[in-house]
Length: 382
Image 1 (cartoon, helix red, strand yellow):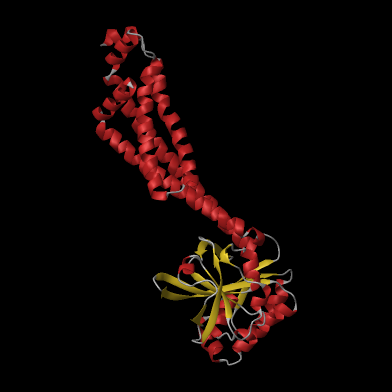
Image 2 (cartoon, rainbow, N blue to C red):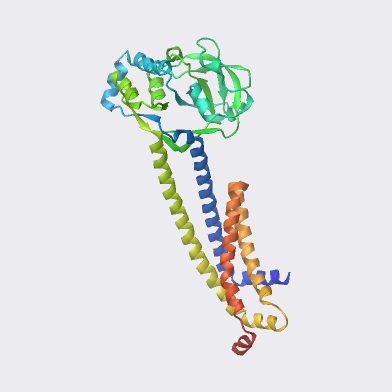
């Protein structure tokens, strides 16, 4: 306890420098914890899309020129052409998934609600876990008339009651009845193949199944365009598929290799990680220099005191413990604030490891300096 009292006196005597040190450590811990969180979230996204990282997986991008948009919209056969294209995929057993959504706004106090349409393979691919009720089944994707099954995100589960029927409105303004069959678990999410750096949380989304026969969906041109531009196709003959769509002379859809996109984003993430590591190393280096300077100042000011302690039986270890208490106090304060901000024990575990390494590095200087102390030299110089 005496060493703790001495450490507290050291802190008060060097208050400005120690407060500055605490602020720097807090900023570094927050930056490090936030970076770890981003890295882990990105890894989770990549893991979910690992099935795309192989040959024969392509995502669609709309490259339609603005001057062609009016022509396509005015063409009364555009919707029929695209429906035929989707149906041809089913007929040739070419697997694909698609999902698109519209912003709905506020629903009974829940803000930023989205209405999403998705086909069967989308749900099989992402495998959302259901909190209550059930997920979509095969028969849900062939209903033409009558009530549509609806699966809602976790937050909307507080608004829509399970097994109750509600009125919904399509993007074309058509009202239909939907029965709530399931509620997804909290923080369910997915990421699109052409933008896997963005996490799409579905807590405030309700899903409507896309009928396997595209004509039965009664989609308008906007829905068709969204279906195309959010589509992922699994095929070994993308050239034929590309030609089939080019022939219909509609939206200029291009198919790109998903593996190339994932590798590109992985490379970007690796570069970001290197930058983060570089920033952390620089901050730690500057902090170590400042703290070693502070500890050197403390040692010089208390040299005579250390000599007296050593003369009366204290060990170098006893004196070093004073510095250990200083470091522990600073790091514990910083860790508590970091936890208050992020509230995630798993991610905080990485920050605790950083704190341990940082503490060891910080104590290297006072350990080496104290180890070289000589009682005779101390008394002679003081």
